[in-house]
Amino acid sequence: MWLFGMGGQIAYATDFPKLPLFLNENDSPLLNILFTKWAKWKHENEYRLIHTYKKGKIHLLPNEAIGEIVFGCQLADIDKVKYAERIRRILPDVKIYQIEMDKKTFGLKKTPIFDENLLLNQYNN
Image (cartoon, rainbow, N blue to C red; front, side, top):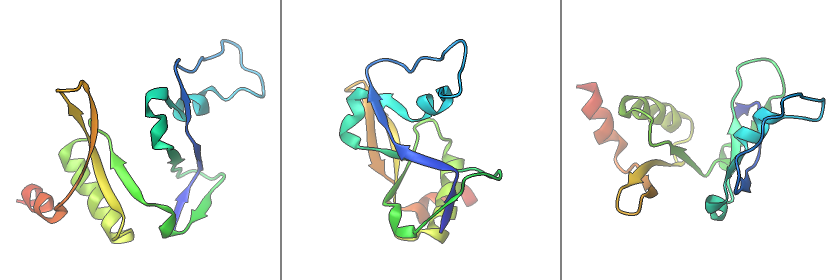
């Protein structure tokens, strides 16, 4: 089981979330930023989980609740290896992908990390 602080479905929008100058008790601008994504990606139907090490709202999830993990395109290769090792120990069957910039379409593409053992050996030498 994994522990997470909060989670929810992504809201898709055509504009950036606004940060109010004066907050009231109903405002949650940080959550709006963390859980909002450009409308172009609505087809992903994404949910996000945010991990916390602090005391607070922690939810237990069964391992089966996690179908895939996607690394961002700016994550260093050495960190991909480190995280992939940890993920494989806990979730041996989860699919792991990385986002890569597609220069032909000026977009992003999600590609699977196929042979982590080869990648691990490359950075352990």
